[in-house]
Each structure stands twice: as structure tokens, then as C-alpha cells.
Length: 133
Image 1 (cartoon, rainbow, N blue to C red):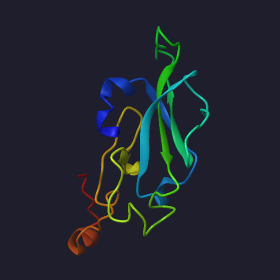
Image 2: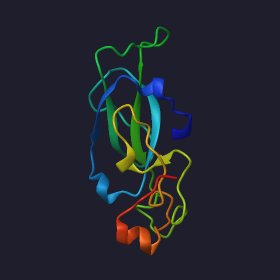
Image 3: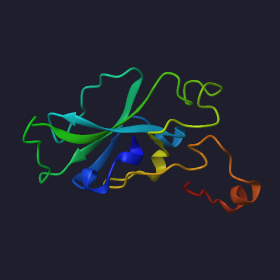
């Protein structure tokens, strides 16, 4: 879950690669996956689709036990809000979901009113303010 990702686990990220336009997504799910390389598009073995991934810098060390690197992968499932707006997550979001506009390399991101399915108040909309939760 994104709340369990710590700053030291993503400290070697240099870039986030998006496979889709994140401006169209209210949230993405994120996880730390064990992958064989520091960079490049990883294989994807979940339902749904991968929407992005992190690239690690040359100083990232592989696990001594497995030889793999822990990299963030961003993904969505078929029942997520972008595919099923009136479904399970119409007014909420999964625990591991964050607003993709709050993500950067080495920044785990946060939930926002938009990612949680709520709408900002009219005053906040007029001022263009969107608060993280």
C-alpha cells in the first residue's frame, strides 16, 4: 500500500514514466515490485493495466538475496473509477491509491479530494485550490 512506502525505499528514483495521460486519471494505485532491472518497462502480471513505473539511478543496489530491485509500479484494475465511474470506487479510492499529480521521483504522493471521489467546495474551485488529504 502507498501508505506503507517509506522515503528510503524510493530514494534512488530518477524518473517516473507514464504510459497514459495522468491528467485524465483521478487516482492510480502504486506498489513496490521486485524487478530484475533498474530501468525499462517492467513485465506486468496483474489484472487491469500498468499506467506508469519508476526508473532507478545507478546507485540503487539490488537485494543480496534475490538480485532484484524494488521499483514503484502504477496501475489500475478493471473496476477502478476511470473504467467504472459509478462502480465500487465512485466516491472513494483503494488504500494504495494516490492522486498521480502529487507524484514525483522520490515523492510517494498523497490522496486528494479528487482521488477520494469528492469534489472541492465551490469556493475552492473558484480559487483553484486542491488540498491533499
